[in-house]
Length: 228
Image (cartoon, rainbow, N blue to C red; front, side, top):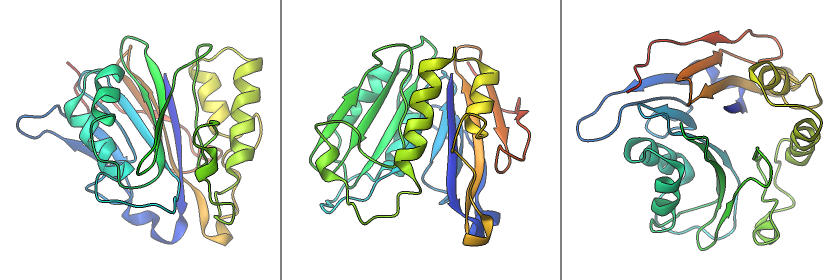
């Protein structure tokens, strides 16, 4: 099971979109975006699921930013292992993380920058990421003065929650909705909020989405997308 909050600017939230793509010669997918041609999260017809966080880095090169990479992998990959193989050979332009899951139950987080890649595999039965590099290999790339929307606090909320509770659909909804600690409790008057939240279940082929902050908006199942 894969869950993700998208935290972004309230002032342009009417431009954000949920989309269904069915193009020639690639896998069909559904996803969510603030920038249309890139994807912030999505699932394809085979159940491969991916979602990003953005992390600024000082070194930027020509290549795939994390949003375009997310879309590319949804179009091209059936499994997490296939996606990792693609990540390791593609040019990466900038910084971010990519959390991935597939219908076999394989999960991983890829920490990405223009020059360094780190793959995090689960030590237990979960992985998670926020807008900061947490591994020893990548943490030196973090920019301390960057406003990361309380990334460390959100990371610790997830860490503590996973260590204390058994993951389930209700657990995912409560975690993303902020019931176990800070995750989405932003002040909209400061132009920040969780503007959508999504839970993909790639093994059961189900999609649940909250059209707004999950602390206030209910999740509804989306059955429009057709899986293989």
